[in-house]
Length: 111
Image (cartoon, helix red, strand yellow):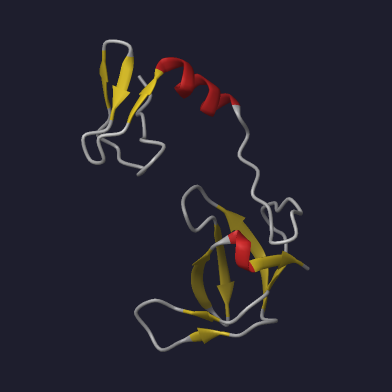
């Protein structure tokens, strides 16, 4: 059987209780129908202008971004090539100046 992941917190310790799935980490509950609907929906990641992004696209930062836990600031107008889309809150993985970053698509525009 496929490992279920909580759609709210991405927790992996989901269990089935009668007709619902339950995540013990965040106490979120959802039904089997909701699970099937979310699996059937194709996740489309869009940039700040609403353009769909794909793996391999180039993007440009639309504002200065401070990198959490460091003194690095990614400047507005910085270009990232060959992005990779991932599931999660930060839905774009990219390499800028030789360092890997996970960014939110809302701060990017397609180049």
